[in-house]
Length: 110
Image (cartoon, rainbow, N blue to C red; front, side, top):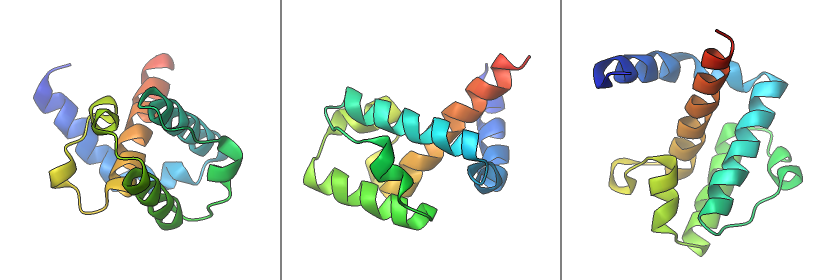
């Protein structure tokens, strides 16, 4: 996939991703991927705890707190984010991981 196509897909996704978040299956897959990516960086999370958060903002706040308490630069590498460019790192991580789930779902359906 060329870089301009990837940017275009990401921009489209950014405008609609919260509607995908409302789908239970998509949300569960995204939470599972969050757990996996955090685990790869040495931070242990569990699905039951993450499912307790009813809003994206509350989940993002929880992830921000976890990141502050467990700083792991490799997490940003795993998720493919630059820390300095994010106002709300937790929300940026959720969105980036949700995009991975979206792409996996999209391309596995073809």
